[in-house]
Amino acid sequence: MKKSTKTLCSCIALALLVGFLLYMETLKTTQGMAVSILQKGAIFSIAAVSMNLLNGFTGLFSLGQAGFMAIGAYVTAIFTIPTEKIVAVYYMNGVSEGIMSIKRALSFLPEPVLVLLALIAGGLVAAGFAALVGIPVLRLKSDYLAIATLGFSEIIRALISSPQMDKITNGSYGLKNIPGFGGENGLGCLLVPFGIAALCIVIMVLLIRSSYGRAFKAIAEDEVAAEAMGINLAHHKEMAFVISSFFTAVAGGLLAMYMRSIEAKTFQVILTYDILLIVVIGGIGSVTGSVIGAFLVTASKEWWLRFFDTPLKIGNFQVPLLRTGFRMVIFSLLLMAVVLFWRRGLMGNREFNWDDIPRFGRWVKRKFTKTPATEGGERNG
Amino acid sequence: MSMLEIKDLKVNYGGIEALKGISFRVEEGEIVTLIGANGAGKSTTLRAIMRVVTSGGGSIFFEGEEITSMDTQKIVNKGIVLVPEGRRVFPNLTVLENLKIGAYLRADQAGIDKDIEHVYSLFPRLKERHWQMAGTLSGGEQQMLAVGRALMAKPRLIMMDEPSLGLAPLVVKDIFSIIRRIHDEGVTVLLIEQNANAALKIANRGYVMETGRVTLTGTGEELLNDQSVREAYLGKSK
Image (cartoon, rainbow over all chains, first blue to last red; front, side):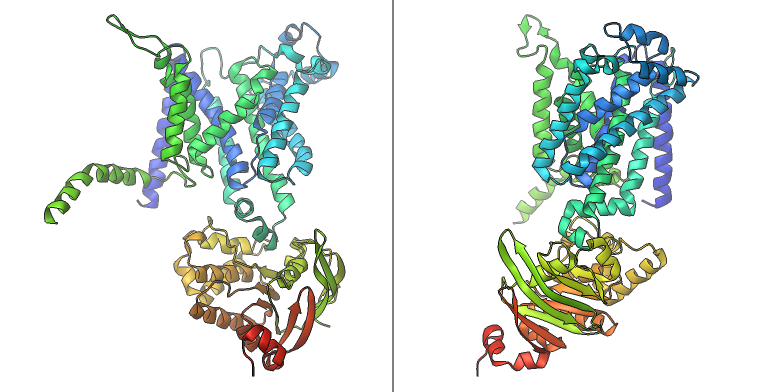
């Protein structure tokens, strides 16, 4: 395929996507499930790409995602909960004076600007934490790094729900009344998360393609050789960690807006595993793989497999096994199948390319024309 | 003033003295070789110069300036570059990306493009395969890539750690002719080799290392004809 054809294909695909999203926004009330899957998919694709940046491209096996998402979510929530409702949210312990004065100072901003500011602030706070934690922790390698970052994420969660933080994080009561995406009529409820996700992912892709990205990949491949080329290991690892944490926190902030109410329990280790799952299914080292994985995993986990959760009776025959929770069994089986048949994830470490579509067609064709070809061979022999 | 001067360099690996105080020098425009058996400390010497391992004493001077405790990054910037043992190209990066990594510390885009062309002219095979993953190259091609990658840093001193390791005899011959060509272009070479015969033939001077010490030194020819060297490393006796 020629390059101009590919650009044309991409433009058409983008236009179709925007059109589809606008159409879905009008169906918000009737197609609630599809809309919320799309929102969650967009959020998780940011988290997955930023995890891939760190784990796939830089080779640092970190499991601190939930902690950074929690930081992003709480900062975003505190910034965006409407000032007139915040006292009601903190009804048990009261709001800290610091938060109130920040909120009063920012009250002149229109809501969209405030939301953007909140997401960026959440990202920056998480990046600050990452910079501090990274100095000791990034000396560790592979599994040890994973354990240390996992520990960090649990500390953050414990800190958020501790009584000493009551006036800031509302302790174990959680935060609610967080404004969601879009206005009353659903306008923007998809374009906002998709727009922010696209922006974040484009920035990360540009980073990966720059000379910094090459240095990250070199570190992932061979630390000693990278160091001998003059790449400063500590500096680059720290940079990847901080940038990845920033975008993870932005995803966390969006998750808070999606859920409308959060508590410390939302950000348990299981959240990190969900993201890791998406990265592995999509392909470690593939940005498009992570995005595809995010939508696929979210949709199949929460929507497409719902069928298995409802008991089914055909005539007098009660179909066995179908009951609430059974879809997770099917989901796990599917995961095992994917990991067995696509060992390196759906995309491996390649990126999506328009050439893949005719190639996929040929591959299907070959699969179906294989049998007559072998029969012919046998006859001749 | 020597280009590179090592004085009484010591390195410890967890209590084991890998280098017990070695001294040698490399003059500008020379090919100098360190030969010796496994475990003599040859690779350790190069790693200590690059500061990929920390030295436990002694000092290293490059063009009169002490670089003993300088960061690797700065050392590369000064113009020393290492072609590591076992090639160590980045297998899942393309050939071109590998070369670009070699020029990581340089900012002159025009110069980098020119040097990529220069490396391609030295190794036409790399040009043919510039889009391939480095891991899919043959051993000899990977060695060429490792040398090309090092040249991308525009070094004044190139240090090669066993470039002939695990390569077929014909390919080894190619590699040595490349080393000579790089040297003709004005790059000083510090070469570590187990293939003492080939190394001493192209070297101006050589040092023989044994268990962390320099035991013998001389011009390439002198060492080639030295009785003890012939017996120990060249497998010949008169």
